[in-house]
Image (cartoon, rainbow, N blue to C red; front, side, top):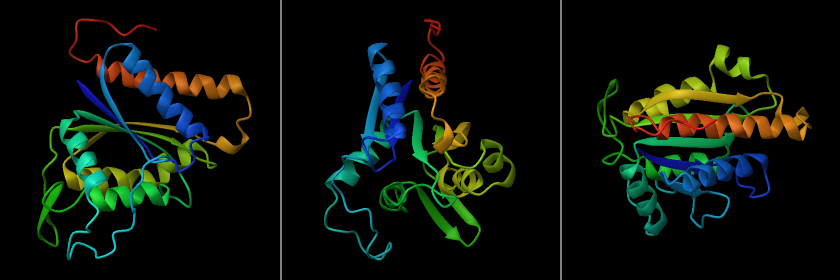
Length: 199
């Protein structure tokens, strides 16, 4: 099982960044096939300046991202929810990497063929709103499930949300959430392997 972690917070001192790196290091220490894309340190232009009319000249980083997505069986997205959506740097990566011809083909207004079928994804989010709010009333979760991942053919299999994140000041609670996230990814990584997940 090839696991790709995409860290979508622009601040490398954030809790989300620490959470993503903790899961990455946990899997790497377990000897699993894991790679990471860290948008806090990535050097790329997240603005899709010409839409899909023409390719932007700077493509090195985007080519690497697409290669990692091709390689991955399961993609783990880590990001905070700001204004009901992911940070702009992560939205920019989606705009520039999940492009027509690579991720999907549109054959009409309601006819879309996803090219990334067989891949799965998980979302690991933090939000000032309660977690149930995003699960019950849609917004960011339904958009990712249907429009971003779904249109590309990727199946969303797990959603973890730490709600009220701004007020979770307990180090113990934050570490517990990080541990739950890494255990969830371990369970995915060990799927189909003889080695059981270690608690």
